[in-house]
Length: 249
Ligand code: 8X3
Image (cartoon, rainbow, N blue to C red; front, side, top):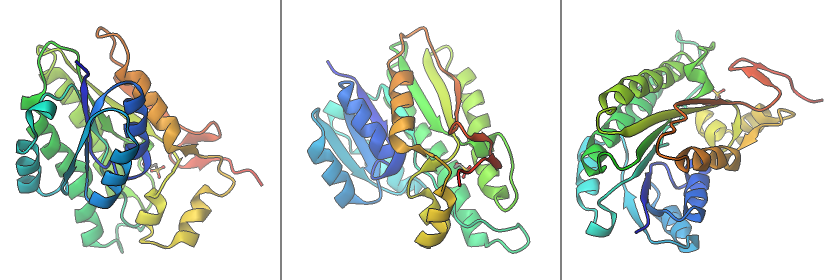
C-alpha cells in the first residue's frame, strides 16, 4: 500500500513543488491550503491518489474539522510536511504593524502547532513516520526589520527539537529544513503585492528555487527508517547567512 503525505501550503511555492516530488516518489497526498482552485489544479497533474483540504492553518476549529473529515483512504498519515507560513512586512519593530506580527505568529507558529497536534493521532507509531517542519535561515540568524519573522521561525526550530524528543518512543522522526533565499511568492507576500520590490530581492542573487527544496525534502523522506536528517540548512551558494549574500552584477 502506498504511503500518505500531508502537505500544508501546497497551493504554491515549496509546498506545491514538494507535492510534485512526493507524487513522483509514489506517495498519495493530502493537499492542504487556502486556495481550493489551485489545489485542484495541482491535483489534476498528480499520478497517485490525492485529496484536497481547504483551510487556514491558523484557524484551529477548521484544522480540527478538516482533518476529521478525511476518508479512510487518507486517514493514516505517514509523512507530515508542515510547510504553510509566510512573512508579512519587513520593518523595524518600532514601526512594524501588529497585524503583520499577528499574521506571522498565527500561521508560522500557532498554525504549525495546530496541524501537528491534529495529525499526530493519525500517524502510525513505529512505522517510519516523519514530520518535516519548514524552518528558515531566519531561525538561525535574527536580522534587522525581520525580528518577528525570525522569532516565528526560531519557534519552529525549538518546537522541532522538543517534538523530536516527545516522539522518540513512538519512532516518529521529526526534522526541520531551513532554507535561505528561495525564489517563490514569499517576497511578493512579504511586500504585500509590490512585485517590483519583490523582484529586487532575487536580482543577481542566484537564488534557490522551490524545486531545489522539494528535491531535498524528497531525499529526507526517502531515507531508510533508521536515518533522520534532523536539521537541514540550505542556502544558495553565494549566501553565507541570513544577512550576507553576494550579488552578481
Ligand atoms: C526565508 C528566508 O532569508 O528571507 O525564510 O529570511 S529569508
